[in-house]
Image (cartoon, rainbow, N blue to C red):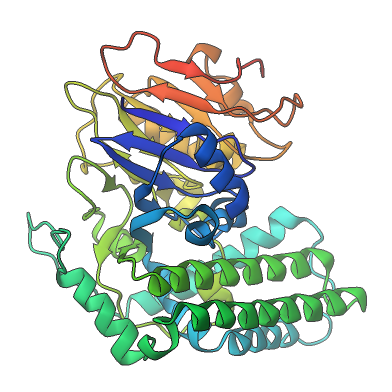
Amino acid sequence: MEKLIALPIKGEAFLLIRDGKTVLVDGGYNSHDLSRALKVHVPGLKKIDIVICTHADRDHAGGLTTLIDASGLTVGEFWLPGTWVDSIPELIKSPQSTMKGLLSELDRPLQGWFRDFPADADAVAHHFEKVATAERREANSQRQDYDFKEGEVPFPYSSLKNDLELEIERYWYETLNFEADYRNQRRYRKQLSRTDRAFESGRSQIRYRKSKGRVSPAVANYWLELIDAAQAIRAIAAQAIGYGVPIRWFDYNAFATSRSARGGNGQFLEPLNSVEQPPPPPRKLSYLAKLSPANEQCLAFLAPADATRLGVMFCGDSPLGDGPSYANSFLTKKIQPQSLSFVATAPHHGSENNQPAYTHISGWARPLLWVRSGGSVKQPGATYKAIDPVNRACTHCPQKGLKLREAVVHLERSTLLFRMSSHECVCR
């Protein structure tokens, strides 16, 4: 039976069962909660064929950091953001250096500039995301990415070693010499324990600066989010290396230049705003630019519809556009829309900040159903609430205090009752 399951955990995690394979898109906050939910809602599951992390925010990436250890499941592939390559080499070899660099950037401004920074958390995030995005774009303009020929399918994948897997092995084991450090599982886990202490030391030093009034609470909290992102990125990458799981990289920057998404597994799961590539050499960026969470670069994917089943659009936290007010849609000529033939996950948990995404999706094709998971009391926003309740399903409603509950959607076109279970939507 082909279906989409929005798992009832804090944060966002979706499981797609399609063609006899399972795909996990994000993992919520916590690997143990994720593992328990998988055992309850997919009993007998032994393998997840594809694990996708759309971006490094804790409510998406946190549950993937120790997924294999916590669940005992086998993972076939990890699909990860190509922008992580800028930070992974140093995070793997010396997370202490990353923490030192982050603190030096926090201490660099003179005359209390960070101390007097606006207290509004959204304003702080918006400012630093703009700074980081501008720096990334400048660096990317000076870097040559993989050049696909028209009609080429990048990196055809099989159970045997292919070009992508060989390229990853060359990158990790030859350039960064990981084989000696990570092929032994005992050493791998011991190393993870030591690096966890490095991240906690960084957090303590930021809290100390906050307590002394050297930085504003909003800036301190933003820097703590950078450490959370760094720790998640490192743990997921090290987990894949330690268990010998192939990594496939999906780079937003290459898409932003070409406006043509490519890669993935054709007609099964394809990117909407990225290009699959071998890992390019890391760029020389500030730690802020390496780690700053930018929703614009959150990966989005589409499992296309066909004659027998509905498609699924995984939006993550992406606004599905860029430019001023995110007005330039990512949904262009990548895949021809099919009216009333797909289900969409609510962008950014239904946040009003991602209102452009709803405009872009509805202008491309109208989803049969919106499925919302995760979020805070600020979500959902007015745009999501304006959708007919018949066309939306939620795992919980923070504003109404409803408990977590799975949302399950049957994807076969022959199934008349598409939604098997979820909360009845009452927000207006």
